[in-house]
Image (cartoon, rainbow, N blue to C red):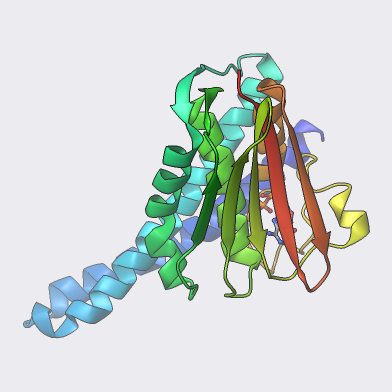
Length: 229
Ligand code: ADP
């Protein structure tokens, strides 16, 4: 993709959450300065604050993704491995997303762990892959139960995130791990289509593989397998 096109897509994606953010902040300011009884507006203000946090999180994600793309382009994308337990990382990621899961109308995520999941990996980067796939599952999972499964294989571990949402067509499966590729149209949900591309680079850097098994309207299983060391 050429630079101008990237800039135009990126600025467009940044503008939407930023406009909303400005509006919500203005509403909140008005409520605070005009109200004699702030307590009476507490619930409404909390709701607006939650929306503000959501928008900032989404902006943050966009900027982090763009920085990762810049690092990949300049060859500065490196992983730092140390001994970690994937089971702990999965629990941490799920706890961090718990509120988002509830707010989005999902039952609590189900975790299924088998075997010893210790290995030498980059904790932050593998956490990023898990969070990214989970956030997509929340976005496209139609409020149905999401399962995260991790199992020990002979020389590797395999992680699967299962949703029962909109699914992905056969032709889209081919391209969603590429840069800027999105199966759903941009007015349905926001995002630059960089998350899975970056996830693939992270898993490649661990000498692993990442793939998806999916059927349209039935759901998706996003899997990655990484060698223990
Ligand atoms: P983004 O979420 O920013 O669009 P991603 O690289 O994370 O970018 O995802 C690329 C595309 O893959 C998404 O736009 C969506 O069309 C599709 N996709 C990803 N995860 C799922 C899922 N769990 N169910 C259905 N489609 C998905």
